[in-house]
Image (cartoon, rainbow, N blue to C red; front, side, top):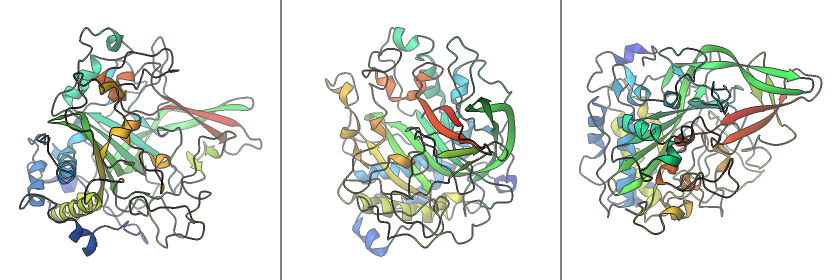
Length: 496
């Protein structure tokens, strides 16, 4: 896949260059903030290993493999160092394209899923396109509705898109265990599972309006996005894809990097954000306060917006509808005002937040010396979460019950562009990736059409592709331009 955008930054980048392009700065944007002398000093010996950050450049090599070494006694610092190593590795150039964009996507799991033939561009669908399958389930590799059914609407009125990308063996394991084909239920090896070195990336993308500058220093590329339309029957409307696509410029604003390393079959879960996304707060310190605000502009926060529950992180999956879709412009309203409530993911390990800060400072400093003024220097690691070593194994009597309460490291890990509305304010810590991703993803009481047997592979929601077990999110919307309030429903599926 060749994005065909900002190609001049890729020339001569076969072995050492990172395939990112620096874009025109946004005016009046403010850095979320990392790296005070006090914070760095608190980290002590983290990063570990003389010259560790300088070694990150080795992961730019197209032949490099994902780092997988992780001892059973590894500390918090080493997990967060892994996160940066994996982030650099996932974005290394492969024939002019970031590595993760060369991997397979959910649409590839099932045949005949695309109504419109794909080009070489990244395609960001919206989980509303029907499949030509008996159950009519939706399936594609992008999303505009998040896991809780709400939508992050950018300052320009466009939704934030997401895409998922799987390494080859990860993809193969998923394909031979799909619920839709009956393989999940009938595989003779009910512990058919991933291997060390497997990985999945979920990226989030901010669509730029015509003539709009990208967030300063972000990676940008071109992508196909569907043209949406209102399909109305009387007072009832549905937002549906028109069957047409348009090519737009998108900026990378967030990324989950999830990898299987030694002693950790649950995968290590890390998340990154562009540093201009939103104001950030020290872990477990944010409180809603209508009298407080930030004077700076960010990609997803307008200067002076009160830190009140009425103004911030307003969920859109409400009834009656609070969101309007204007088919003439393709835009939604009102926009979402965002903060990052836990800038180091609520890390509870000794010196955890200070370790993450120190690793960010060291890694961003090293990335500033990568070829072509790499945008990686402009992304922050929020945090990393994992289980205790060798616990997500069937020889552990409690493997089926492991969930968010067993997370180690960043126990409140959320990305403002992917889990915007699920963040934990002060006194609410403990929500993280493992809350939704576990062996019981498809076996809890009440799941439709019926509960399935718990399996380790259920930690990945990709096995639900093309089946009724894909999480159906519904977003009530009012059709723009209508004199009466017409309720629309964006039917979407969120997958990682």
